[in-house]
Length: 76
Image 1 (spheres, rainbow, N blue to C red):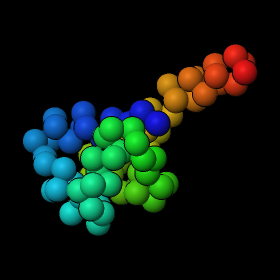
Image 2 (image 1 turned 120 degrees about the horizontal axis):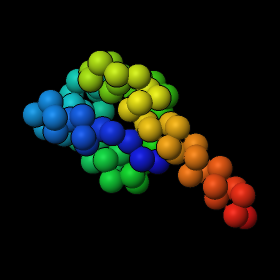
Image 3 (image 1 turned 90 degrees about the vertical axis):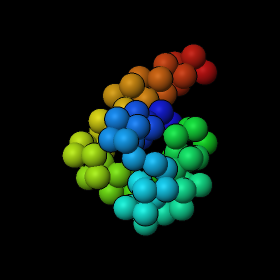
């Protein structure tokens, strides 16, 4: 799932470790989210969104991801 985590983190001049510490996960978790290899839980997405003053919907690009998923569903 595409997210804006890396974009928001770099704009805030924050390291992966700093963000991980703030939301109580490992830096590997943040790396995996940024590489789209791991989807954050709802609670983790909420914590990250709070750090950056945004919504879970915006952080997780929910409209865009839903459109992609809908398109895949139609193609199958």
